[in-house]
Length: 616
Ligand code: AGP
Image (cartoon, rainbow, N blue to C red; front, side, top):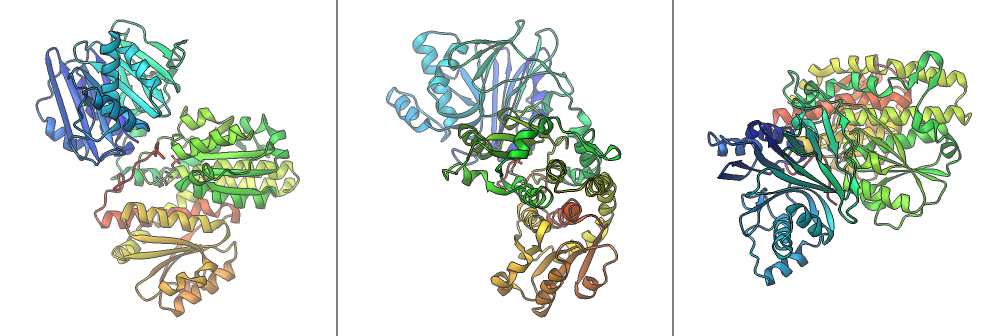
């Protein structure tokens, strides 16, 4: 939920940390701060607002040495203001911390520290933690690493933290429980980077350690990194991984916004998702994690899908896929509800957890619950090595590449791609899809990237439609069958980036209430592709038309009937019904994008949101 960046070494730390914070702004952007250490000079800058505001505040006073620690925040405890921004400093002025996560028992700890004379200038849980560390360090007269470790044993909650002592600027302590933290290793123990993900240091090193939960690392200039378990002090051998990420992937590449870039990346992202898995010519779907557990999948009583937001919508599409293609019963659950509902989970159930970031706290908690009840948990994640990817029994990555725009686009279509491959494979093995049907599906799937490419050509038409409806206060999205979840997703996209109130409905459900909203000022986006309840959707369009609603219809190329009825049509290529969400979602992404741009909204960083929601 927040972004942490730190540097310790021989380079100038400021540009590394400030640029790194800008790359991590997708994690939170309501306030930011940085501490710069240069021999005896300590400069702390904190501000409400974005990293660009922080940059302005620091301005030319950035001539610092080789230690800096920065933070970009998404507020949990305390409103976004200068005082609540990180880094936080202990009462003595010696210890500094940046934190991502929530200390749930901070109030009890704060009261205890207050009775012992500690004072607080912010409303944050983080300031409590740094003072707790200070108290332990002073009382036990121990080293910083030991004090941090002891403090963390009293903490309930989630954290990724980086802590250092201003009087010993050659050492940083890093620890993690439930929130990610990576350590980049530069030259010969002379050069260390710390960040919530590897993007801030990708141009400096390809070697990184991702801390596991309950691990604490001591990073000291001139020494090898030492890692130990927080609870039992067990030594952990550092696992240095080679980063696959490159700079190009995390830059805008000529697009005005990351969201637009990511929308246009979908043909390649889908191809990357099924590369090596879909062998259409051989009539095979090869997925190691499914193949190795095929008995479990084939004998599963039911599939329970847990996810949040857009990933939940992908789960809803998967419900249609698994039921339709593999005749398997599916339940799709909001992870946040599932975890608190005392759900009935049996040994023969397979839980599929879907998450782009792999860090969503509710999804992670749902996985832990399902595992504790004996379910086999399969993850569909984008971020390699993320908490969810590690917590699940096994899974499949989407390989969409970094998604930086807060609004999910390519994550959605690539999640659907993975789930489609699994459903098709199981459908064939269960005998629900004949070999010839299976081959037809595989052949068509291999054409989807080029059909998405073709769909993207409607951009100019969508932009024109956006200019007509950009000031509408409300919008309805309707779809049926496979395209009902797409209607939900279209509405979510519009809401989150343009702040227009939008609702998605199954088209036929409209007459049970929402139809009352329709008048000449209500735009209604209807997904009316040829395959899938076409005639029924046409009737729904008639119902809207009779009430003077404005119809924006997504239709199959060559459609004539809806063309007569709708105010605007957006044509997409024909495909099999099960694959239509991969195409129909594209114009809806573009529509929300253009409307948001025209309304002057911050497309990549919409208000109040963050890319990964690592708190409940
Ligand atoms: C979608 O545009 C949102 N960013 C949000 O709904 C997101 O899908 C949700 O928070 C789940 O995130 P995850 O896929 O990283 O778990």
